[in-house]
Length: 429
Image (cartoon, rainbow, N blue to C red; front, side):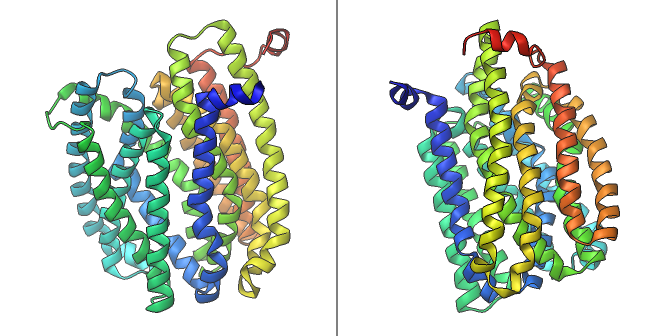
């Protein structure tokens, strides 16, 4: 009886598919780590981490969180109007690409000095960031329509294409860290173009300029720039600080350990992909009974993800010396703290959706900017005192602080009975 109900429950069904998808999607490159760590050095992984950090920063300014705005607006507009809305997304995307290119031209000498990568990769990062945003819009549409199967097929295909090309460039052509970057670049560009085709084929893009929609996109996205930069700071600044203070080799070890720890984040994001559309729909016509059930479910989730992170990281610490070989054994020291940090991020995802739904993103930016500044100072201090492990300590502390403050802010944005525990337990599930 219970199993039959779960099979017919759209939230459970989509959560299962998204979680399985994330496991497969991340598991493909993860399972190839024993191969890659025997062809690449910790220094190679350090360069890869630095470059991916740079792309992550560019994506914030190129994308302006527009895929998130599409996900919210999907539930408020008919398809014809949504197509015009997405058409204006593409218009803004072209402008932002142009402006970011000018900024890179302006700061090129400084970027080359800090990143220590060939100049061509600075400019290749721009189309990569652009295609990531377009792919994100396509996936957001599928997720909002609760079409988890095409979503899954697309993600898995992209991951396979990415890793197979990377293996070809690294193992056959011996390109080192650049081979890994070439593989991911090719995958993002090819599948970004496919996303444009999918969006257009389904009738979700019409190029009809609308001042109202442009203002709405800017109203949603611009206040989130500080928020997104703040979130990028959590991992991006750590990579740069470890490179400059400890060395690029330790950056590589930290990056590998980070990949194990962030498995918890993969589960959390997979669940959130299914949960956020479900929550937005419930919030449209919320009742006290539904409020109570959502709060109780959220508390159970909080406890579950903490326990899950501790169990998973214990296994990984034991397993990593066998899995990666001698060169990367030092990566195991980071896993506990990074896993715990991503458990806190999973808890954050459960409460931040209320702020997005209320479109009070400026409140979110205030929290994340302050906690990110705190993270930078804490990370710098702890790395100076304890080495690269200090970055992992700082991540766990600052992620927890962010969760607490965002939780409080979400309560101000959308009133939920978070602190009426007695009422929650008196009600039936």
